View 1 (spheres, rainbow, N blue to C red):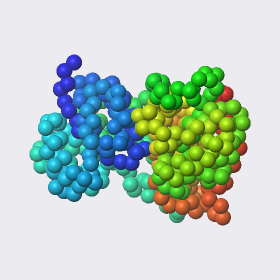
View 2 (cartoon, rainbow, N blue to C red):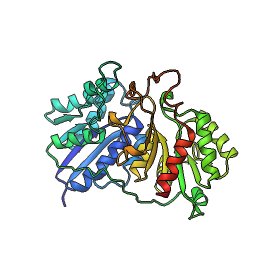
View 3 (tube, helix red, strand yellow):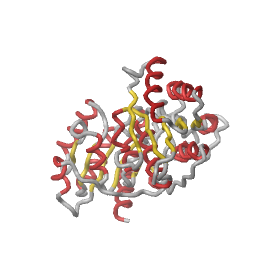
Length: 343
């Protein structure tokens, strides 16, 4: 079928949000095979979109050649060569609005995500809190395409399709009968991280139960922590700093389960069709950022009238003497994982 229309999609960061866009585009491109997508995001996130039919990835380099208004105009000049039918702004920040303005002045149709800021403020405020589930972010992404006149129905189902393992990871998967668990214990914001001493208790318990464990996500400091855990606990492997993102995604696609914070690890697992047991502190699944296809029943969190008090996890918990993360017992997490894996 000939490609009849081209849509430029804008979502530059953060990692988890871009992974959620990829989950939506996987379904959109199947349901709209005559449309070509030009995905504009950071070069590092390209692996999220590998294998999606009729999609071209166009990197933005915001710190160098695409910095400032002149840099964004340079990006616009490159993108207009695609002759797009429309722009789907899934970011709604200063950069995406500026870039969209150039296209609008050229007569190109623009549709932008409704982030539901007022609803989210009502969900997280301390007084007169309106505690109810908000529209999932993936549906907010899909709404932009619907407003452009396209049909898209999200299944909200996990679709597992194991990829070929990187050669240096093959040895980890030789024990076919051993269940494989990914652990993504870190997050961009400290307040979303389960206390590391308690996370090590979880890792110790899972290791003693015979599961094969793989630790994902982080920089040098996190890598050092993961290396320490890997040395201390059998069947535990640190992947941080040892694999490229594309290789990590391939490994994730072969797991049985992921344990994650409310962070990019959850969304990467969703993209690969892997169920996630997730741990929530000052944030809450009701804000709309639960991983695509994941179940609220697999979210571990405490009930407190103050929760949630943050959308992005950049504010500390205000539940009382102890933070809401500290109130979650390691055995609660281990028991949930056992229940999930063993039915």
